[in-house]
Image (cartoon, each protein chain N blue to C red):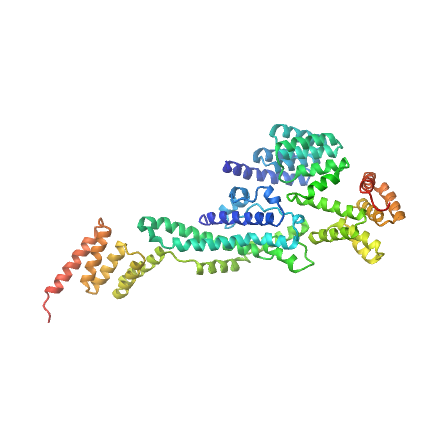
Length: 296
Length: 260
């Protein structure tokens, strides 16, 4: 849950900023006067919403007050102002996915930078999910959510404002929907959809191949193990353990020259590893035995 | 800094909610609770709410004394606005003007309390038109004040015989929200067109108290030149609410209606 917090904070900030900024552009400067046209998260966070962010799987910011009487075309401009929030979240999704194209190359700065990039990649992944869910949730056409502002635009009889009683009623409906998890399948759908467009980091692909190589070795499927270790090295060529893994796989297939080359490479990358000289010795021994055994 | 403020606000919330709950049942305990909520959270809006509940439960003198002591101690424009509005409530326009001046030197009240005060003082002094014209060019007003200004402008147009303008303004108001005053203006225009059915429909939607409905009738009949009906409505209004009747007279004098 904590991993969602940075993304949610950024998402709520840009969401509320976008409402305030668009209202200001469309003629209502009340939000600007109230200091809401700002990317400073502190201006947008609600104390209770922030607390919920920490203890529950959701949170919220202080709503931006909009004065419809100051718009030129109240219905259209209110809708546009409302749409700006989810649009800003979708923009954040796009920016996040763009940044992930950079952070996915975990080994771009060697092994040391890999951890930092991997952490950043994970945070971006959660941030993208948080913003996609925020956009989706707010676009639900049920008052008081942003999506409901479409109705006065398409239906002339629907006014953009409600009486306090109706407002409370809609809130109750929304709370019931959330409490009964009625929205969960749709939210899960959004998360899954985001998952399909989120690029996997090189470190994750490396680990997947490396583990597959390990499993193949255990199952004595040596050609497969060699192939998986090669694929892992394709992601991160400077991995000592992947070279060692391939050395073992090659040794098992009697490819001693290749195995020796791999293990020497592993020793060069991680000189302090005590296992590698032992593997080298066993490869050399087996290779010698092979060459001294007379052929029948 | 934010963390401290955040913790304080968070700590004040349960006290505020408890205070609001007690206030619903007019329990005296709500006042100390709300004062504590303000002292803990230091959110001027909480302070403003505390003052309004003190006004409701303990009366005008107590809330005025508290607002002015908080203003002297904490120097917030929100308290100046509240103290000024309380002064207006007891018809002390000069004191309200002093509070407005004090508030304006302290800074902006983002929720528009000082704007309200400025408008209401001008209204009491018969100078609302000038303030309304000055405020018409502003785009940072709170919705309630914008609405009031638009309603005033709509009645103004009606009383000056600019019926098309009044109708446009009424339609614009109704496009945003239910609006009894816009319905009252459309009722007057339907009366003028001698369309009894439409007039009845609009008047049914004038969801105001009986004296306020009569007030609208006085303005409407006057605007369309129905002198006998206007006089009758004015007589009824005098019986219903003397203060509102005086206000209607002021309107009719101040707005230079086309026909009286």
